[in-house]
Image (cartoon, rainbow, N blue to C red):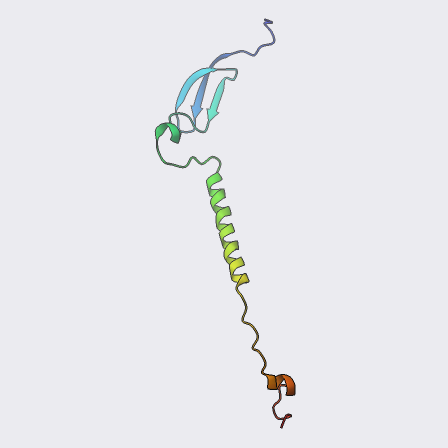
Length: 101
């Protein structure tokens, strides 16, 4: 095995967003992660939303926009009042009744 082509593999400190730190081995010196086994809902058993970079807020805004558009579409699709049907007399003699007499 060649000695000069492989990266240096050394001890590394991993820092989580929750404040937990632990050491492992890696080719990088320091690692920063958003979620670790100390705070991940799968490992802790908590029912909470892990929001990375505001994705949940963005989804909720898109959901509200879609719901408001659906409500607007429903309001627009409601049938309009049909025009009043003309009587046979009005069709034959017109709208003015005085001309027919």
